[in-house]
Length: 321
Image (cartoon, rainbow, N blue to C red):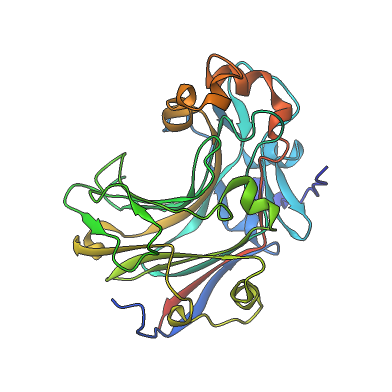
């Protein structure tokens, strides 16, 4: 059982080439000392039509859906009550927007399911998006649905952007080169330790995103990798030239990255069903055997989502100076 400390303050409720070394300076950081002062809770209808009810900060605090545990930041869902209107959940957005940079996220635990259904019904994401979607672009750093075993990294843009995966791990598959709109250009990774239950079983790890005018690249370092400890350490000054090959690298040979990606906010959320997890429900034998629809399963089985939470030690933002 995860013990959640109520932690939101009262003030919150008052209203290139990889080998080329880049000099980065820490310019922003999200950690247990400031996280809930630096994000807004999204409470609108889910744009992707999920069976979800995103709650405000006061509700999240009062019901244990947000707080601190195990020295980190906890963002979770209602895992106690059946529902007919959508499962209560959390979605937070950084108050600050960023254009280019190096983002280092130390994540010990990500949302996953428990019991016979595994992660059926879940659609968690750690991502960034800009204004007037998709004009400002979107970068999905961690995303997946149901019992997906490995991470998918996806970009979404306005028309006119196609990417290659030059420089990605050989095992990573470029599912689509056209980044336009809802489908986007996705790279499907093969590691079973970078997402879901496999991620959690090894204590999570560290994700790194480098966004430059030349490329958008994502690395994953498992908790046992010495690089994970180096990047998570206080005062670390990361150098992507030492990271090795990224799990996913998007190169804008046919896309002007600076024109398609700007002023992105950081988002963490836990969705259910909707336009992805719900649409593919019947194609997953494990999920389809649980209930006729994704919504029905999520509505009737809160106990399946005890492990459906983010635990974040820190998110650090570095920029070139």
